[in-house]
Length: 119
Length: 114
Image (cartoon, rainbow over all chains, first blue to last red; front, side, top):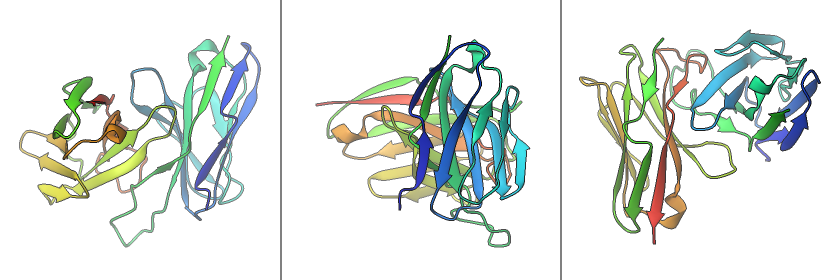
């Protein structure tokens, strides 16, 4: 059980380049998320997915795209990299079942992070 | 918008002493609160959570206290160890069962002094 795996761990991009951050989880979690963390700041939600084929915007979605073709994978795409996208990106997952209401629904399992620098 | 904040950005504690990390939240509708620990170079890890129908919840060496009257949350770590050195984040769910509205604080860096 590897949990949440992100690749790459580090990447340097030039302005205008594109790239995809990969995220996969093996816990059969239905919810998946992408956060960014800027220095000295908390985590900001970029996009999330409540299940395969369903994605939605978070707090800071501009400049990013996601897809969720399988339960396991949730890649984050940067189409035209900008210096403002320099950050550490975290993928996370959780299991939530409607009707149970309660414990475990909000407990996120995070990946180790991907540090992206745009120059 | 609603926000979650922390009173102190850094905290240094002697090994073996108890530590208290504070967090203020502003969304009175939030009904679920979580503490995460982030070690250097790693993703955040769940520590403990509490629902708004409780005032206190205990885990192994950790206790979370919730004061809804003043919208204040605290994390107490007993008998601190070097491995407790990390950044601690509180988060609130904005009265949303999923994590779509989960709001994280900016974090408190806890340093354990040997």
